[in-house]
Image (cartoon, rainbow, N blue to C red):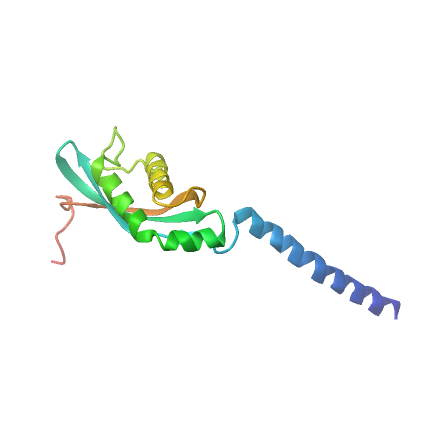
Length: 147
């Protein structure tokens, strides 16, 4: 009888402790509903006046709260317009390798653009999710297609 009471007590304690531990891990990431996924951004990679490739970039904006995320979603068109203007105004490539995106600098630039296009305090972060580079001309050593 004591064993049954002990097991019942342990299962109740586990039911109380385990969800609390899961809540702590969620707080470490961020509050649910604070991420806003942006449409793909197509950015040119150039060396001087020569267009080398296009970079297809996806990113997520982190809002200060779920309510702020709703406001940001309402401004996506304005944020995307600021992104397009920025990446077409100056190069996003590294100075040493113009065919490679300088992710650190680009993240800072896009974050500043998103913050300018929204009310102060709404945008707290931006993360680049994926960068795909497509050259204008296929490499001469790659086959054109099936033989």
